[in-house]
Length: 215
Image (tube, rainbow, N blue to C red; front, side):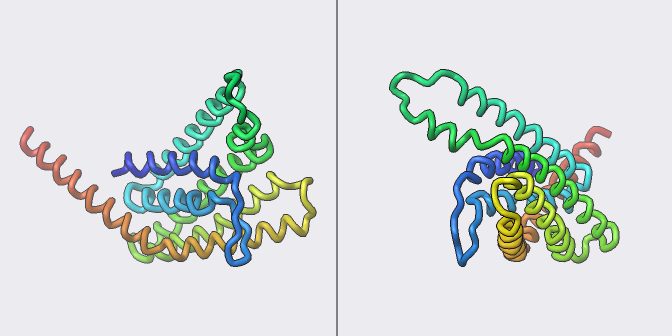
């Protein structure tokens, strides 16, 4: 199951970068369309870390970063190749997929800092509690890392383009929305951890059975 989780993690990262172009408003919160998808990536690294360990969670983060770089490269190539004479949506294509260099850098920096910080805090709590209190490390790590992620992204992406009070408002509104999402996804974390542990136990039992037959 680790392979499926890692693939889903990388895939959601790529999708979140594309969806982020659109901003929607709900209950007075102005949020990028990618917010729920991107938040799911933290859920997945928590599940990977809980079941497979800190090193596997860190590997997933590195894989996600490399995947993003590769996808950005191919998006750049796709934008730069000459458009066919009948293709009259080059401007829209660039606007949706291209983004700005400043926003791309903001996304990559906030990703690296927040994801690694999440893994660090999550596993510090896991060292203390063992398998107990999954809800605590899942939510506490998110409270810290989502503030870091939101602050870093918005400051790098928008500094100099909007007033400081607007920056602070954007950080506050997105942070509150993200924390609400984190609290709501806690049951899903427990479900995925249970499924992953069940699959891991099956794989270990199968490996043990094969090993015994070889001997």
